[in-house]
Length: 381
Image 1 (cartoon, rainbow, N blue to C red):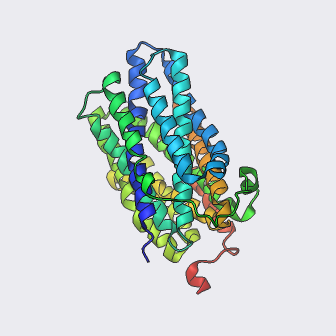
Image 2 (image 1 turned 60 degrees about the vertical axis):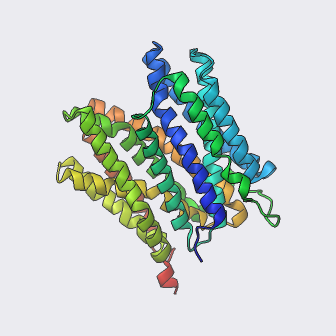
Image 3 (image 1 turned 90 degrees about the horizontal axis):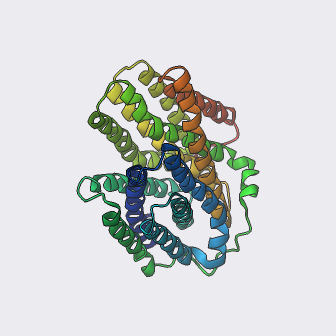
């Protein structure tokens, strides 16, 4: 039986609309603030308020879902995101934009937790890798589509906000035709703190932190590294497109292999490939191939690690575990660029790949130390 049931397809359809809106705003908000003559540190504070909202939204999402259910929580998250988007058009005041971007971050975090948890609950141990791979593919495709839209429409504030808000509202429509909740669902009594103490899921949680460090560094600092190599903006865009495209291309095959041969084996291969690709990037060996492999392994690490952790908990604990994993990833994505940028500034740009290889090596040691505790599906058979 196919894992892509009607509720799954409708969830992914709504996610695609939302991701387009998120990608457009994440790119344009710093530009709008710059055009409004705000200082660089003010632009940074507004950006940080969005990520702060992500953290807060991740923490409270479980209680929201437990109180009003998946479907109503999804609609509420879309409404909050749409209102925060429209609110930016009311005033370009620094303090008001801090508030609007904070609430936008909360709404986005709710959406991610709701959609990921609903997908995990609709699947089973044998197909969750494929479902999360589809989720990540839709997310990255929406991101690319949002960036392409910027080249075809006006980027003026009051021109963009109406159609972005309309796309967000359109994302609510698929969920009007499907019910995610079931009457037999058990009450959600698990908490993030309990999930953090779950030793059997520790490898998955650590993997999400490592994934956040790697992807945060790649997203935030790879353009800087390429610029310091003397590349033009157009060429940097080409290499970044190659990086993201490799992540899209790797999602489905990696997810399917993880379901078939075991996530522990796939995680070991992924981090080993990350180390080798980072070494190749440090030596400038076959940059196109090395960057493609780096993106393919790096962008697929998060869904496989998430699948590993989620198969260690009961169905009614999936929301709490998903909160924990998303929070771990967010913390890693905040720590990675800040730590790596300091090393690059004080020593060398190549330390970007040293950091990626270093954290991957640490995770590989964790995976190898647990080699005798876990088995693959083939070994069990």
